[in-house]
Length: 585
Image (cartoon, rainbow, N blue to C red; front, side, top):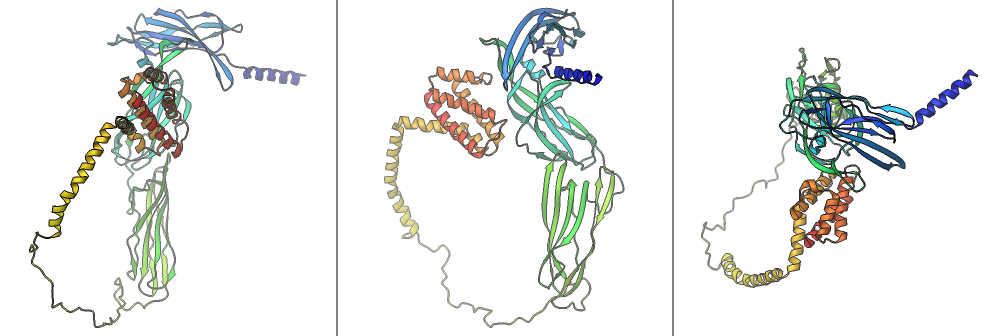
């Protein structure tokens, strides 16, 4: 009987958890402000309630509100409800002030918000209100550089990942790099990011969305404190403004913000003392191997000997040990081959040097053993690897004579002379003095005489064609429009094949074209504004729709992959649209 009640209680508890949870929270426009600035606080809930009671706002003067906003949306077939009470506050004194708890009754239950602390500082020179779009963009957008290790060894791999954190209150419509770090004290390699992915995370304890913009592998080349320069971006941020549409929803305004990641300092440690004599700077974890393509052959035939290092570390930044061989083995300079992939764990793969060896005499010849040493940062010790001696057996060929050791023998053969290896000196010549030719009657003389006469009809024909083209007003306008379209789209054409750079250049070129033709600013570049301006200028509906659809394609391309054919189609469509617009504006 007790078990029956226990199971029933568990099912009721689980059913309660499965029900939608009520969310009631307080949000402030900023946590630090001057005493001469205003603060906006929002009390937001996802269920409708009764008897809303705001806090007393001790330490503040209420200069606006309460303003109420209700919104309903359907996402993936599920209806979402939101109700917000907003207040504008003016602080009365400096220091840490607390906004108390607000209360609401939802389904006969009382819910309270958590207290929020804000820091009030001295008056600022340029005060801003609590709904300033520039300030909202600055407080809700953060570029962060995450370094995997702050104290690596010399030539040990570290990773720096740049993440852009965006608050749910704003959205990003475009971005571009203003300044890239140089990494002057590092060997660096960027890791390609095929597609930007939006993920959920936290920034300073608050829910944010973030995108990984860049990943770079760094191998420090100096010891001591090194500086990693910041990455600087220009970002177009869509921020809610004070204006509302006829349905009561906020109208968003685009603000251009410049954000930069912080400077990062790392302390690079020198490699410990006790380096082996054959150490050439390898840092990581490696294996070492020396192999030959064959061990038995005839004199005059060739074999390949390969010295290979495989593993994870600074594979491109050290020298392989050099192979040696007896003098009777003719050895050519090695060919270096690198099969290296770079990811967040550093360089992985192999590097090898392949020697071509040709024996000249019969006998058995040893290829001496080699040794390779490296530093393992995980154990902080040097490790030494070696290979075994390889014996080369040459079956057929001239025997090695009693020549001094270290001097290769020479297979001498008598040269048979045919009797015509030398030619007789010519006794008759056809020599002429230099500069003795007469210009009169020469090919150059007749060319200079006839070509000007033959060119007269060509000049006449060219002049007529030029006049006809000058009178062709419609054709000139079409050619001018096409030339203008290709001028604005030149950057996009150069980046065909690179999805990210192509669509950024395409969107920028279309915006620049409208700015030049309509004399509008970047902040007015919303699709609704562009549609209205083109209709005011009597642009036909199809051309306007094509222009807007191209802008939407540029936006979708940030989150979905696009083929080369799709990029070429969008480029050709942009050329036609700009050409058509230029004829109508």
